[in-house]
Length: 195
Image (cartoon, rainbow, N blue to C red; front, side, top):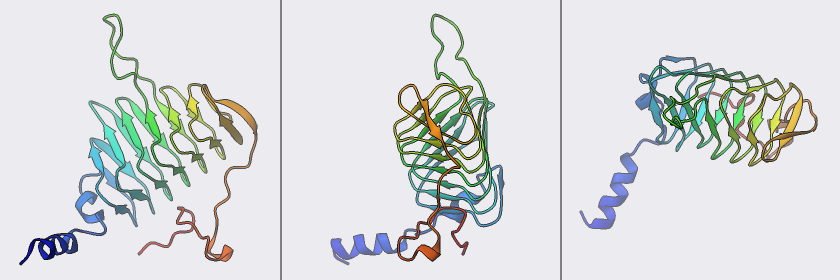
């Protein structure tokens, strides 16, 4: 077997869907979990029904931390790190390179790191490279703009953006393209069909 055919063989036997490799590592798993690629998964992480997680995601519940993800969620290559608790509702889209963290990481001036729970409501869209910091609650039907740094609570039905994130206007949440829209259908959680 030549070098090129060996490489082709190696890629042919790699899993296309990593769900079964990760299913047992979750604290709780609902129906129809899909993991599309290799992810980092540590600690007490639970997911609800019909959750799709893309390769490159990092779900890290370290020390006594807990991450609870609701149903019908779509998580791209985001990093979610908890030493206390992070709760994510239903129908949430978390875009690529998002950071959600409930702690400071390290304490300053000889003090221990501050930990405060993070809560994200239902039907929330978090844009690419947004950062959600400790102690934040995001209300239902909200949209977090790309690159936003969220340091304070977000009221329900709000669109926020900027650093620090500020309310831009009211919203009813994001619109999901459905199969009825034709070829621009996106595999977002409310409409993707489980295998």
